[in-house]
Image (cartoon, rainbow, N blue to C red; front, side, top):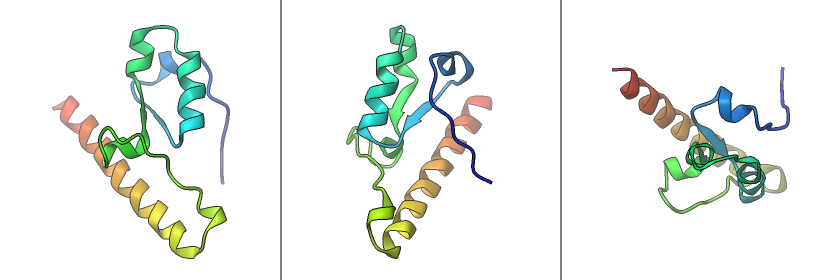
Length: 91
């Protein structure tokens, strides 16, 4: 089952971390930010792996099967880092 929805301004209240997959999503999210606090919650997903590079996740649909594997591995590793970040904040 897949679920998706549009980002809303209320998400700044609901979430501590907001990760954008590409530049257009990042820009759209930042336009909705109401304050510096909101903007501090937003980052590029791949900045977890490549800090400060502001790289977007490629859309594998327009590439071969190896691209799907590459995206999966990148996101898997980035998600592990998110878990580590949250776990260390709870300790």
